[in-house]
Image (cartoon, rainbow, N blue to C red; front, side, top):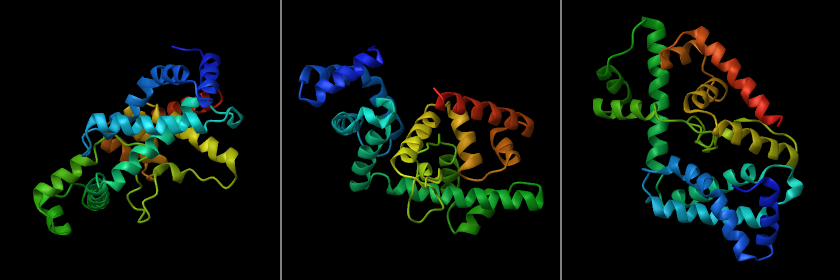
Length: 240
C-alpha cells in the first residue's frame, strides 16, 4: 500500500498522462473499487461489467480530483464510482424493479408497524396481501427485501423524485459543505452493516429507538447505547 503522500504524487503524474502512475493508483485502490461494486452484485449486471464501469468512474475521479478540495482521494472517489455504476444500471433498466420493491416494502412495513401498535400483534401475511392487493408470496419477497443491507446511496423510498438518502443530509452552503456531505457519507458507508442500518433507520427514515429495537431483536436501551457509540465513531472519523 502506498502512503498518502506517495499516492498524491502518483495522482499528479497520472493526471499528466503517466500511464505507469495511473496503473499504480489503480492497483492501490482495487480493493476500494471491489468493495463499492459488491453492493450492486445480483442486481442484473454481471460482475465483470460492474468492474469495468466502476473503473471508468475511477478514471474520472483521477482526472477530476483536486488536492485543494481538502478531502482524501478515497472520499472523493466513492461517490464518483457509485454514480457511474448507478447511471449505467439506470440507463439499462437494472434497478427499476429493485426500487419498486423497496417502495412496496416500505409501505408494508409502515402498515405492519401501525397494525402492531394498535393490536399488539403483527398482522398475518394474508391480511397484508389483501390490504395491498398482492399475493402472499409477493408480501414475503417484499418484506425479505427490507432486510437487505441499507446504503447511504440507496434511494429514499418515500421520495417520488428518487433522491438518495445522502441528500437527506442538508447542505445550504457551497462546495465546502458539499464536500463535508461526501465525507460524512463515506464514513457512514464504511460502518458495519448493523451500525449503518441503525443510523439510516434512525436519522434518515425517522424510526424510533423502540421500532429499531423490535426490528433488530434487541432492547431499546441497547439501541440507545449503540446509537451513541456510532455517533461518537462518526464524529471521531470526521475530525481526523
